[in-house]
Length: 193
Image (cartoon, rainbow, N blue to C red; front, side, top):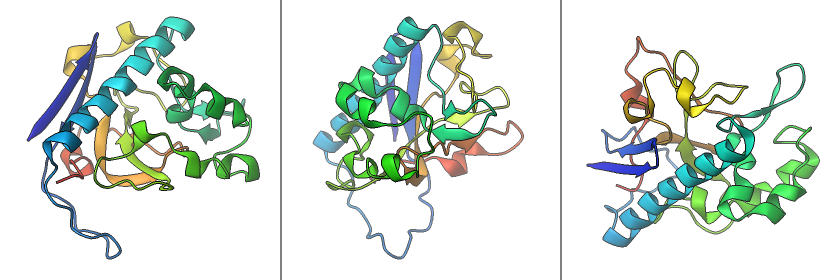
C-alpha cells in the first residue's frame, strides 16, 4: 500500500515494500490498524509542516547540524523541534556537540511522539524510521539546507521523508544516501505492516 501526505508543496510518501529480514530481537508486527495508519499519516504531515515553517523562518529547508569543519553533529529532526511544539526540548540540546555527547545522549529518551511509528514505538524508545534521502540530487544535502525552489526535480517529483526499513537514533545525523543508479526501494518500507 501507499501512504501519501502532501503539505503545501512538499510530498511525503511511505511505501509498503517487501519487508527486510526481521532482526532477531524484533517481533513480527500485525498489519496496521486504521488508527495507526492515520497517526502515521499525521506524523508525516506534521514533519512536512515543520519543514515549511522552518523554511519560512530560515530561507532553507532543515539539514543536519554540522560544525565549522563539516563534521555532522545532529539530525535535521533536532532542527525542527521548535516547529513540532518541542521548543523546550530543543533548548536542552548543545548544538555544537555531537548527538552522542554526554549532554545530547541524555535527551535520546525524550524522542517526540511525532518520530515514533504507531503500534511499534514504545515510551522511552530512541530510534526512528523517519529518514530522508541526501546527496546526488536528492531533496536534502548532508550539511547545508536547500531552498524549496532548488529541489532538482521539483517538490511533486521528490520523496522528502520516508519510513525507512532501518531505524536510527532520532538525534543521529544518519540518513539514506541517494544513488540514482541503485534501487532505493530496498531502503524504504512501511514498518507497521
